[in-house]
Length: 265
Image (cartoon, rainbow, N blue to C red; front, side, top):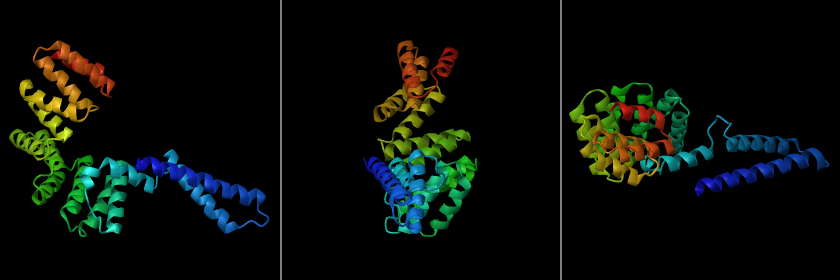
């Protein structure tokens, strides 16, 4: 709702500044160059923000990211507006595939962290940027620092589990995934990751409760649907395997590729 209101406000500003430009160019007896220049700048900035062309940051970006990452942001820097703006700028750079600039900003405001939510937000996005740069050992340390301050941070546990699993530390991965689910049973990604762990271990009967819970929590999570298809296929339930394969495709997954995987099982 907030995003829609911002969008409508942007449209109104575009029409308002456009009207000022037309009036100054064609109807004003004496043109005010200063007013015309300001109106032109605002018109271009807000038009490009709405159309998604503009590459610079804007308040419109912030509203989108605040909604997307609300569970991660929590109350980070709520009493420190400059640091909060820098955090949002870093998130914007992260989403625009510029992890180096994001890391530089995150390192800049790390010293301003006072509360758990401040540290968690800064370290989480730094970890994600480091993962983008394949500096997983450093990302691992970021997640561990988050958990030292808040050992019930479900997302940090879940992401740490992925790092452990990818580096072959299976028992640590299982522990991390389990802690993620225990810390927040409503974390669909954590449920999915734990289910996927059991699928990879050849334990579909243990995987399905977590995978199906993930789908219950997030009906669009095609990764969980793919995991369900594989788990059911491993159990010899072809009907449900096909059902979830089709759901996987309908929600954004590559159904044809998954079909090939299922045929190899």
